[in-house]
Structure formats: C-alpha cells, structure tokens
Length: 401
Image (cartoon, rainbow, N blue to C red; front, side, top):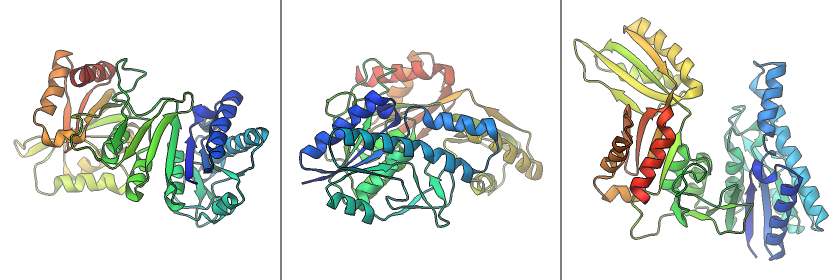
C-alpha cells in the first residue's frame, strides 16, 4: 500500500461536475489500496472574487484580515469535495490548514511553512479515511490564519508529502504535463516525459505557470517525486525528479514572464560600492531584483538598469529617487511594457552556441533585445511586451521544429 498525495487546482474543482470528476479520480486511487491525502485550491476564480470584495470594502485592509477572508475559498472547496466523496460511498474527512498541522511564519499573505505536524492526518489515514486538506493556508504562532501566496496549494501538497514520507505527489492541472512551451500559445509544444528539479525550478521561476517554484524547491530538498498531469484526461503526465539521463535535451522549455518592470537609474557616480548601496536599499524593502545591466563608467558616472516584479515597480522607483537625491544622479525611469523570455535546459551546460541560436531566432523575427541574463542552465532576454508571444514561437521553432 502506498501513500499518495494528490493536489487539484481551482480549475479542476471549478463547478459541481468537475468536483464529482475529482472525487472519482481520488476514489479510484483509494480503491487500488492506497492511502490518499488530497489538497485542494479554491474553486475557479474564487480567490480573485474575494480580493475584489475586499477592495470594495477597504482597498487598504490589513494583510491579516485579507488572509482571514482568502482562507474561506479553500474551506468551501474541501467541504464540497468531501461531500462528493461521501456521495460515492467512501469514508472521508476534510481538514483546514491548521487542523492538518500547518505551522507557518507570520508574513500574512505570503507566509512560509515552518512545520507540518502530521499527527491528525496520520490518525485519519489509520481510520481508512480519505483526507481532504485545504491548501494555501496555515496558522502562525499567534494562532492567526495565514495564507502562502499564489500557488501555495502546490507547496502545501509537497509539504505534506515530505512530512508524511509519501510515495508520490501528483499535481493535477488543466494541462497534461510540463511542455516545452505553453501549449495554449504554441501549437507544436511538446509534452516532456520527465524533467529535472533544476530545470522545472527555472521554468517555474521564469514564468511557466504549471508548478509553483516554492513547491519545486521543497520537492528537490526532500527528494519528493512529482507527477504533473491533467484532471480532465487519463493521459500520463510529466515526472519531475533528479536528473538521471546520460544525455539531456539541449533545451527543455521556453518560458514567458510578463510580470516584469525595468528600472533605469541614469548618471549615478562611478565610485566603488555604489551598486552595493543601491541594491541594499531594495533588499531592505524585500524587493527582489532579477536581470542587472551596468554601463561602463564615463565622465565619472554610470547607468544601472535592472528588473523587478511589476507590482514592485513604483515602490522601487520611489526608493531609487530617494537614493539619487543623496548620492547624486540624473534620473530614474520605469518601463512596464516589457517581457522576459527564457530558455532552460541542463544540456546547455556542455553545448556551445545555445545563446547564439536563441539570439538568431529573435533576429529572424526582427525582435530587439534590451537586456540579457545567463546561467548554466538558462538564458533570459528582456524584450518589448508586444513581441512576447512572437518571440516564444520563434525560439521554440528554432530549437524544437
């Protein structure tokens, strides 16, 4: 008998018909003699609807109260799924995050999991119950409800799998696995049978929405084998695990991220330690910086450009304007009409010319590159947002056709 953790996203439980479909998938797994823990997200657009309701009342509501509201979405889902499983004649119990033992930090709306006490889950499994757990939420040291941020249900599922030493963690989505590009945008996108943790982590971080990057980090840390598959079909999915192939594909996927803003700081003093001071200001406010480009100093000044998440753009500009008012500088500008396009592949480490091939694809499509960032298994470029889909298609064709 195996212990299997199954996670279903909001689209998988969006309506009554889909909830019953999920109940059948779960009970089919249970019928094979497996112990099953199910992690469920809020139905469909419930989370967005709740955020809209909050904004109608108080756009500046505290994050604590927002978490109290947003946690309600998953509570609805687990109760409805448990009712569906009951209807099919199987023993089941639904648990909120805190009942399932999720202990988190106190960073409301973006809490981190500190520990999962699986005592209650294991007791319910010992009673031969199917356990349905609310993803995305937990309890902090003040006994306040917290949420884990976007994609938090993926992380919840992997955390349970790690804490309970599960044999497999299945992530059910609305696509049949991990593809070389978004199959809804690129017609000839190919499904991968397997992908390494490192490649999946890069793709998730760079904009591929099939898995949350925090869940992949956790799966790698605890060596949890993930399977990404569709709740709508019976097709086999993609296995995410440690790389085992002797020869890796040159490139595993192409990702697009439009949640990007470019900040340009022009004419700052060309002196030692300036970059350290500049980026320390951003780090102290919890603003993550991605691609960085610094010009060669001239006439005692230099320019620095970098990217941040779009929601941090205006705050980053305000911080930089305060910074240059002290150290000196000409101007700070913000551009939000940009997109980051990336290629990822473990095979890139031992093959020359991969970046050149990507740049050739963009040249053929007459797309201008604004910034470039590279690592051992990825190459990212910043381009105009209007060219994003065309760029993905051009690059994908260059590597996979």
